[in-house]
Amino acid sequence: MRQVLLYQDESGGWIAECPSLPGCNTQGDSFEEAVSNIRDAISQYVASLQADGEPVPEDNFSARVVAV
Image (cartoon, one colour):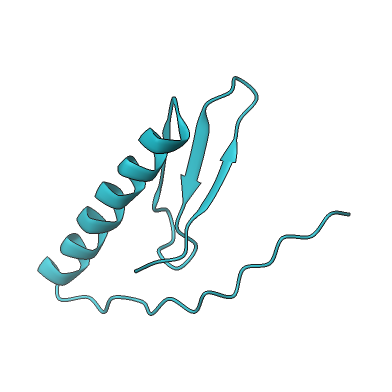
């Protein structure tokens, strides 16, 4: 399981990012589509690291949301 950040963009679509996997992000027209897409992106990202013999980063679930 990985921590994922989801937020809406200016057009109403959803952006999904996985902070523990740099560059692992995607989007969707709906929240549900973005969640499905990031699940696939995480799976493919981890599979690629493993195929290349690279270590898979741990997830630390430490994101915080603040308003400034």
